Amino acid sequence: MLLIVQAMQLLTANTYTPLGPLVTGREFPLLVQQQQVVYVAKLVATSELAVMQQLKAHPTPLMPQIREILHQDDCLVSIETLINGQSLAARLQAQGTFSSDEVKQVALDLIQSLQHLEKLAIVHRDLKLSNIMVSNQHYYLIDISAARQHQRDQSSDTRLLGTSGFAAPENYGFAQTDGRSDIYSLGIVLNCLLTGKVPVSRQASLTQLTTAPFWRPIIEKATALDPQRRYQNATALLTAIEPPTKPVMRLRPARHWVSRYWPPVRKGLWWAYAIGWVLLLLSSLTETNWLTRVTFLAAIFIFFGLPVMMHWLNRWLYHRFANLEWHHYRGWLRAAETVVIILLISYVGHFM
Image (cartoon, rainbow, N blue to C red; front, side, top):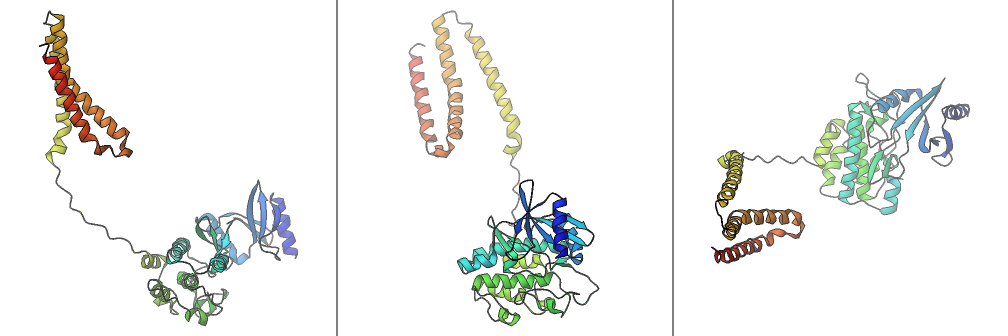
């Protein structure tokens, strides 16, 4: 009780306002508030401090973020972001078995967290339905109170922790836990979602495997008693669930001369077009009769200007109304252009 009182004083001294316990009947974890934001305060054992500091320095999006670690004398309190949602255990009880696609989404999210823990050489050691939160259509791995850092020179864990039915055999002292232990637990979790059966012992978890053709071999390998026969890391499990697509080898086509020389040719043609207009306008000045001059200019416009204007109008309409599938009407517009030009030529021809 003295530790709890000390923790409450520590929170108050750091401007955190207690709101109430996160779990009914337990003083901690505790919901606290600071500047209108709600967090979760947890008591931290000295043995957990190294893991906490690692995760605080290297957060992952699909696990609670450790905002800070308060300490005074022997009292340590972590402040973590609140994952506001429903536990996977409660979701399974409410909706029953999960579809294959839903199980795949659970697996992909949790594998992302396990990959992050592997990089930090951290083993969660208590991956189970109640330690997975469902929030905003994602699955968050919570509660790292049982987590430890993997030690290469140890033959077994110094503390035997884990939940019966979900914990790998090495959690009971047969060997040291590592990332493969969390893969075992994840395999049990996925099997629970597929079968709807929650194991109460290690023997029960191995006799209630799913019969789904896709998932059964994956779960059998993930939950092998011998760690050497399991997936050796989270990435290997990810590859089994979602194999990478093989890139399609495509031969690079030889570059056509048109794509190389057309831009400068097009630029030259536009310059020739502009110069042609200037020369035609200058030649029209030699006409002394104003009617002849207007007729000449109209003919020039019909032959050299109108087709270009109609072409750009066609392109503008195509891009402006692309959602109307304008390409079905472009042929009719081209025909209309031709008819208009022929009629104008016939009309101007009466004056020439």
